[in-house]
Amino acid sequence: MVKIFIDPGHGGSDPGAVANGLSEKTLTLAIGLALRDYLLKNYQNVSVRMSRTSDQTVSLNSRTQTANQWGADLYLSIHVNAGGGSGFESYIWNGQFTKKSRTQQVRSTIHQTIVNTKNWQDRGQKEANFHVLRETRMSAVLTENGFIDHQSDARAMRGDNWVENAAIAHAVGIEKAFQLKRQDNDLADDPLYRVVVGSFREDQNARSRVSTLQRSGYEAYILPYAQQGQRYYRVIAGAFYQKQNAEKRLDSLKKDGFDGFLVVV
Ligand SMILES: [Zn+2]
Image (cartoon, rainbow, N blue to C red; front, side, top):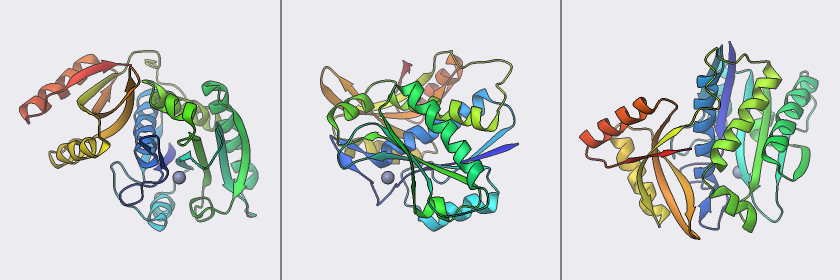
């Protein structure tokens, strides 16, 4: 069993970078959840845990402790960049440690796969003294997925498939680095049915819808979306490869008083 620990950066009281009507914490959570679902759906013998599955505040210490206690094989921290620039970069710890060459190899495989798949400007394979890289006992990689304050990067982030494509690129990188085997019934090219429960102009309203859904027991998250130059925040309460499962979710939502619709990706 290969254990993948996914860490969507920031969350709760820490929004991370904010610009162009987007916030880092919602993008990293959306990528993280999509990555988890994709890995579990498409690969054999893979197990996934996450540092957070909703918009909650989680300390860096608690993130790395959870991964260490679980004995993860990979710690993958997902972030979105800011501060001038464009494109993709990744980090591993800049210290000396026993499994550094293995970590370099894992990182390099994931990094190259993402850059090739997403056709992103490659900002390089870097090292830094970040807590989540230093305090983890397993190979730890941090990805910075585009610049939220860069006009064309941000425009791409609002595209319909950006989150899904970022998640799949990470998954294929992990597949190569850990030689994961695909499920026999390969669903990778099948359409994905997202259950949308509300589309809002203000992200504040989208966040309040997410909270209401979570109180009713649904895992929900926000996906930014652009239509005719107008920004929207879609609230997603599930994504399914089987249409009937998506329809079942819609029914259950309706019973709980939520109106939704399906979007095919
Ligand atoms: Zn960040």
